[in-house]
Image (cartoon, rainbow over all chains, first blue to last red):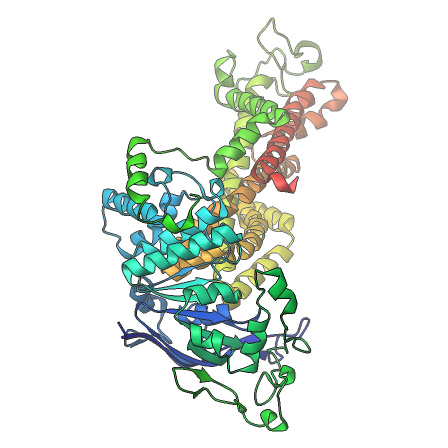
Length: 326
Length: 313
């Protein structure tokens, strides 16, 4: 089960940003949403991606799905390079990787019944399938995610947020994908429903062997579900390590700060806890700091950090970190 | 589903068995909700009734009168003020027009033409405008810029001038009115639809469809258009009276539909020109139909807007 299914190499996604009110011919500035991210994903594995808002988590997911134009680098999926494939040649790969979204209700078309919504990927990729087979499969998948299959004719607004997310998961599952990218699938749900959805995802993974890329900004959720965790900051990878290793022995100062900020569900311990606060705000990705992008907020930064950009270095135990000093 | 841990296995046989016993539940679509709200709107429902009556009048009015719209009653001609008054007794319910023809039959004919112009004109505008706007908005980027700049340029041409020019150059016919109105009416529609498309395009369900690999035109047809149809329907009901007004104005100027055809605008024009002779009913009847119909459309449009977007009241 250690076969690599996804290999992302030095992926860069830059967006053109024009100043408001600029002339049409002025050259746009580049917003470096993802700036040289590399990682590998094994079959059946869960990779958690954490980072604060605007660090490029969602953009990275969309770049892997080939939904945003890629500036440089490559995404190799099951041995095929996906970068630069046109929509027609990309289509066969779309059924192998599916996506779950942050806002459960907004990710379902309000004018379609959930039966139609869940059936859509199946009908897109297997247009020859008979209506009876599609229906049977839809009911099967809905049953798997814990939605009563006799509700297929209902509309999304008749379901709760957690149920909508289950429907979203059913839609992703129906084509038997090998990878599901979960873009903050539980951030919009309340805590008890979060647990249900996460457990559902973990059960499904156990059953089908699907790999997950799990994006979240809640570190405890990520720790619970992930085999390995990747920490992003300003479109750069700071640290990748197995989940337990990362939480027990964070090497990067940014990871330390993130972990120290996780609330502990015990008021006594919570009051004693030292939170490592970072100075300043997140720098603009339009104008990232030179050298190490984290140096402007890093408590241990040295003058040398501004010169050279650190590369991910293996510190043993599959623990990779991008820091000059650790 | 109280215990999150046991979603999959222990409950599964039970849910399956439960589903077996239960029939499929029918959902309430947003359309059904909107219909219920619309049916509760009294002004709109009265307007629907009035409009229905106008349509029945247009299609079956000729069956109620023994007179047709082209026979001239030579006895009345020249003495319309004295002999041509509306009368239930002689069957000329709306009286005579200035040429001694039965005005009821003329109004039936005019109603047919005006409604046809309104409905067909609005339909052309809606279909062309929706497709154009949705494609421009969904594809975006340079295609969008080019398509919308074209609309801007077309809009900057004074359309009444173009319409009059068309009618003068290619002859006055009802087909030419359709062409002229069709050329300009879809422009507004395409702008509105493009704006709506831009906001729908960024919704996650569109992203989900893209991620699934649904082809672009299927996305437009299946995900974009049904979600902007509410706005389109409202605008279309407001477009119909606008079409009728345009046609009436053109006909009032004498450039629109030509004898022996007629329309509300042409009849009103005739009515105003004979006002001085004291035959006010020639103005009153077509004008009443015109005003009532336009009001009905506006009330229905209002009701639809409230029904389709209850937040936007």
